[in-house]
Image (cartoon, rainbow, N blue to C red; front, side, top):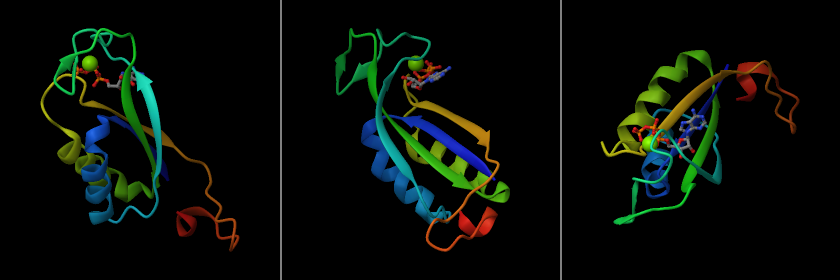
Amino acid sequence: MKQIVAIIKPFKLDEVREALAEVGVSGLTVTEVKGFGRQKGHTELYRGAEYVVDFLPKVKIEAVVDDNAVEPAVDAIIKAARTGKIGDGKIFVRSVEQVIRIRTGETGPDAV
Ligand SMILES: Nc1ncnc2c1ncn2[C@@H]1O[C@H](COP(=O)(O)OP(=O)(O)OP(=O)(O)O)[C@@H](O)[C@H]1O
Ligand SMILES: [Mg+2]
């Protein structure tokens, strides 16, 4: 199992959520975050204005999926979140050792 962590532009959240649902991702955690990439926030457009702050608003999406679902999920995020402009975001993929569904006690891929 893997955890996909994607940092995206906030206005892309709905599209990304729909794209992930289409490829069968069963659960998501979403957090409002702030960050910067290699332009350090300074030269990035946000809602039409050039932001001159150190940290730009972003949305972090976390989804844990079975190994064979990583590629379709990553592809779906890229397709939905990409504008082609700087600051489109980044995707990190991490290994997940265990998943436990609290209600039923199921573990592993059955619990994802
Ligand atoms: N190395 C990193 N570690 C942690 N978070 C990062 C990293 N790079 C980017 N981020 C997060 O992703 C957000 C978007 O990054 P961004 O898309 O600007 O990356 P970039 O490398 O500057 O690419 P681009 O040139 O397309 O803008 C940042 O605001 C930050 O929250
Ligand atoms: Mg950037």
